[in-house]
Amino acid sequence: MDHLKQSCYELSLPVTEKSNPISRDIDRAHSKQMVQILKRCDAEIFEKERNHDPFYQRLYSLPVIQTMVDVAKRVEIILRDPEESLIVLSGCGTSGRIAFLLVTSFNEMLNAQRQKQICSYIIAGGDRALLTSQEAPEDDPGLGARTLEKVCAGKKHVLFIGISCGMSAPFVAGQLDFCLNHLDIFTPVLLGFNPVHMARSELMQDCSFHFKDVAERMAAEQRHKKAYVLNPVLGAEAISGSSRMKGGSATKIILETVLLAGHEAAFRDKMMTPEYMSAWISASEMVYDTTYSRSDEIAALIHKAGESLQMKAHVYYLGWKTLGIIGMTDASECIPTYGADFGDIRGFINNGFSEMKNKEGDLSYLGPEFIIGHKDFVDTILQSLSQNDMILFLFTVNDDLNEVTVLANQLRQRTSNLHAIAHDLEKFTIPETVCHMFETVLNITWPFSSAKDNSVVMRQHWELSTKLCLNAISTGAHVLKGKVYMNYMIDLRVTNSKLYRRAINILQRFTGCSKTECESALLRAVYSTDDLTEDMTRADVHTHTDAANTRERVVPTALVMIQSGCTHAEAQRHLDCHAVIRDAVSACLNSSKTRALWTEHTIK
Ligand code: F1P
Image 1 (tube, rainbow, N blue to C red):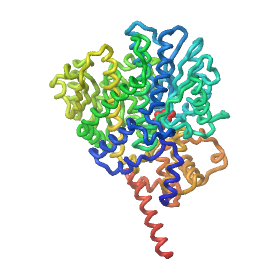
Image 2: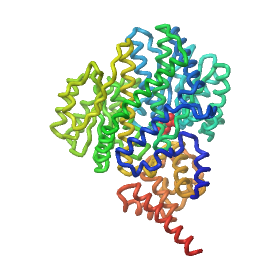
Image 3: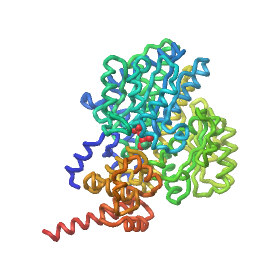
């Protein structure tokens, strides 16, 4: 594919789907280089505006900050008059998990201050999606609207924040549309990371409009302060399209700021100014700086996790309180992103579901993926633990260090592959005896401030820091396992319409073939056939993604079929010859390049 074609192709993608030039060679980097690449990509979250470009507003751009002030004022109004009012945060996948984390923490803070808990979360697919990848409900705008209506029944004022990093999830579009049709009750906010004109314009299931229509209607209503679009650009993700990374982090930073600022205004009469908002963001930037100042330790943890995955062993995150949630969120997203098995990277939390405080309560009856307590880990996994399995503790000085010590001692009897990310404070450090139990400790000591709500803010900073580390570890480990080619997730699971389109985009990117050719190869891989029937080609995307859900290596198979012009069975044989997906893809792309060059040469 020549350069011009390739750059036109890139231009047509929204920012959140583009390939980031910084990480183009991440698949060939060793762990220390990887941390530097991820550090530069994450730095783009805080990058200042370039040439006052109105289409590419950044997080610190004045219009973005002003919108944050406006939304925080809505939070304040609701907190001042909580009867019959509600703040709802909603999203799919990582966006829904972050919504859950923010809502539970904010409600807990309100409860501790004897205030009414007025926040609620919605995640597409319900609470089971907090722990496992449930990509299909994301495609249903009607389901989104119905769920929202139910949650808000009887309320007179609702601030609805719909999160879709890629400005693409039909579930969220359905909810925003519902709000726009009931502006007497709802103030809708769209949080995403593309300019409005790049919102998805593909028609949605049983629907006459698309996401971009909704985003444009939202932008129009913003002029009357009836709706708000919060959409700073963060630059492309380090792994193309992996919005769990920068998208998830920025979602957390923006919404925590807005919620806390509204709270400060309601209960401490703090004035909300743009400077005040910028200061909150700068505090998160400090978290970014501090975290990446420990690049060597992060690299060591990537290396260890990579070794475990390469040996087909496991990585287990054992976290306390919200760090447990951060761990489970990171782990759950590896399945759709890297085609990982649920057992490859798993998260556990102290006290299991009673610590989660999710709406639907204990879900352990749903099966092994929903076994999440530390005690469950000891009861079900400890017996079979091998030295190749990596265990990573996630805790802070405010957690029960006695519990940490007891569990670590118990595990040390079976393995020394025990590591930790541990946060403490200048005045309250974690005793060395605790740190010494681990082979590698990423111990970050944070400056202590005695401000009243410091514990809430500190916890948020520890969560963000842990999220950055875990995103780096799980991404790096999968890169080392060969699940990434250049900076593309070539073994993604094609389980919803966005991922289906992404799969076609990846095939176009590497083969230079038309969309139709790539889609046809993808379908042949999805249905394991060389001859697509009419039923197959006529079926809707939903049917395709349903079928793809049970298939392995769908995109690599399609890629080999296109590049080598071979049958499905031959493509499977080619992949079977390579233990590592990246090697199989690279061998296929290189051999066809050589063939093309050779043909060109002989023709001349
Ligand atoms: C939602 C989401 C992602 C996930 C996957 C599928 O994306 O579930 O969290 O990583 O790519 O989509 P978005 O609506 O926030 O863009």
